Image 1: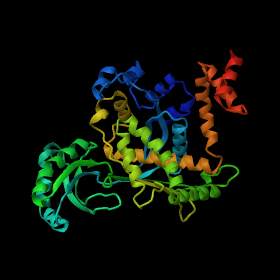
Image 2 (image 1 turned 135 degrees about the horizontal axis):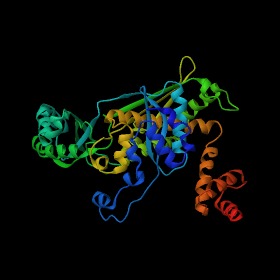
Image 3 (image 1 turned 30 degrees about the horizontal axis):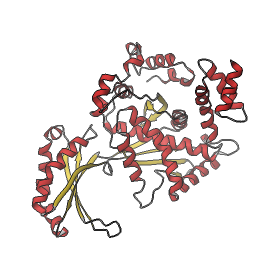
Length: 428
């Protein structure tokens, strides 16, 4: 990627941005012809994706720039309606790029399928029997989906969890069997569900229990990715604060989010602004990713920050995020939605582990930008600058009027819709 063509990308017109992508080597020139129509979801495809389809609902698709991850440059597609998300991510990525970029580690990408048994008379005996038959259970699961086994994936191990009856919630005891399976480039829901459905009768037979259900778990604790960054204090200074003061304030803000769930929810929501935008742009399941990541934030027994910011021995600011990311690069909307296919191509058609690394880095960048703003100038300055443009459009401004109304709104004592309408009336 030739990054020089993406300089001051935000100042270019839409057509100039598309041409810049060609010059940077991210898309081919022939792809610029009728660009919007090529990534538009047609009614024909949409009608086959969901039931009772009546239209399509669009959100803006933009690029997070300056991302240098594991020694490689990326322009990251982000689908979001919220102002400031992409600008914040790009600013943070530029700062982190100058300090060496993001480093990531990705685990084995094992997905979990659950079979819940009830009415098991002796859980300890049942556990012993299941472990004795573990190889047969894994073989049965793999026989249910031989194609994934042929490609090098499949069920690998089992885990047993005993959940006791709870009088507070009036729930019975459950014996839960987890099947861990590698689904390769697929997110794997259908693969896992097929496997656990096949195993249910066998488990009922050997335990004497009754299977309540067999289903994928979106709490993908065996599919973790970690992203880290290191930023020298000379890159953190923001008047009136020194770099050391900004570093310490970022660390303290993270400590606040680690101990206070009321703060942690908003802290993590900001992280998800970036993560969701890439997950959506690449055709992955935003609800599954959201549910799993927020559950992971409670693993200590309290909802806490997903990131951790600390001070290195030499005084640098260290950032880290670890999250479950069971995303896929094939299947579902990834393979049929034209915008998702475009996004994957823009990223260089990454493998699932590479895409995990990109998404985790986006989350860490988003958090750095948000927390830095909070502990220096405050969050509203950046937010309201972009909100002014939304107000101008809502007031009815069109074309060149949008920028004029936006700039006057930024200077106005009260930035609201009434003010925007008054400014537009004067222009007209």
